[in-house]
Image (tube, rainbow, N blue to C red; front, side, top):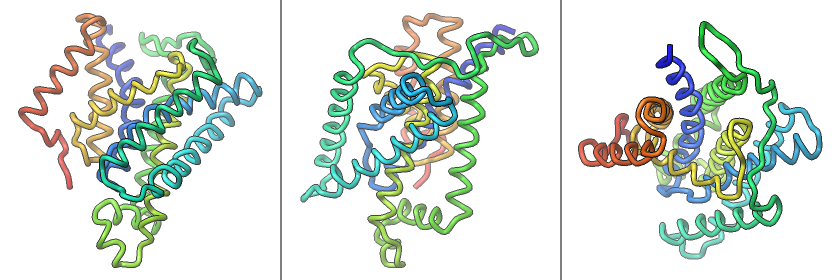
Length: 284
């Protein structure tokens, strides 16, 4: 039963990693670069939700939708103002721009909310549910159900809509998509908006489980690890890699040591890079 408890906790943690990793994959496939501000956008989602739910008193579902939309809009502005306006859009220049955006977001959070961590109240309370002997927080069920809904919605968008098909075309080959009449600039902006919205959703979902702080964007390192494990350009790999990482992390904390958990995880990821650098689900 203890193992099942740890596995369930790992699934809830891994669902957060998967959402963040999905956003990273979208940008990586669209522009062949990593958005280093992605973790700080996760943080922004948490703070937006705290403002809307705690300060303004809006219900959690409303705060969730508005916070995710706000982060998506923020991603759109980042693409328009920090990415598209670069005169020489080399990979290094764009990466430097995203790092600068991340620092700006951290400074904004520090000035606006202070250096102390804040917590978003659990929308369904703090009492554990006893389900077949498992101690489950209602928020864990919220995380799993909302994360699954978002992943399925993203899949449906990609394969059941013309807009999603055009976006996949840009991710696969920008030049060919442009020759076929796809507005590559618009699709790139939309990709930024959706990918950052996914990060914002992860920030809101995790906020009741942990504390939101100006430096919580470091969580993106775990999402990078999920990408390495699953495959840098694979959507399925991002999901599976995030879930596996969450489960393995909780197993280490439960049965080995929380002090060395991250060290062991990153050590194993180095082994994965050596033995299978393309990840478990290589694509592209």
